[in-house]
Length: 336
Image (tube, rainbow, N blue to C red; front, side):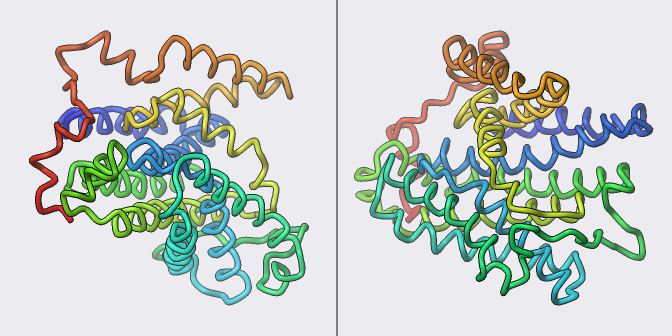
């Protein structure tokens, strides 16, 4: 998707979401759905960047989200750091952890990266619930029960003030979406695609795999950690339950439905997944069966997700971009 189409897609989607509170601002359920759509759309977008564009099969996205949430909660509760400052610090902490996790992944590929990052994800639960976690203020298995709301110029933003918090989340979502678009349409994005398509050929053109792989880990981890921090100040409590397989599966459904590597289709994937999960909640555990069936259907019928369907319906309005190295060859010269 070219830059104009990408910006138009995001502007229309977030624009429609942004005016919803004018009509449904009194509905607690709908406002919570809209807020969670904004939060999860960015987290899923970061995962799509690292997996769909850079070709790094990282399964640590939920881990980075949780690290950002715990970092901001601990800083604001235990050290009395203002939530706004705590959120930025949480993003930086998560970025540093992301780079450290990315270091051993540089020499690995495919399923091995997935195993390393998923092992990191699995290690967080015993860490935060154990003695080390308690020592840094995680609250152990009990969690942190009184995370303060975000305050800006004396105004509080939390789940008690749904409409103000929604627009704060929308503001941050638009900024981070702009950053993601700028990266994907810059030399960095071209380098990510080149390394994904043919790392050996990309390296021969002077592109540093070490540099750009660490870069994508750092950038996506920062944004994910920032939104993890935003989430914890929204809900006001935090426990190791956020590391459950349900969150991981929900994020995976978003990028599959939207189309892996088809950004910004993942935003529609987030809209669909969050809304469907909420509507199916009365069915209890059976909602996961239905959601799983929907994912299987999408994979079989729409391998490129909703974005692929849109391209088929409106072929004249979508730029058919090839992701082969030959297409990007001229842009790659001098990138490294």
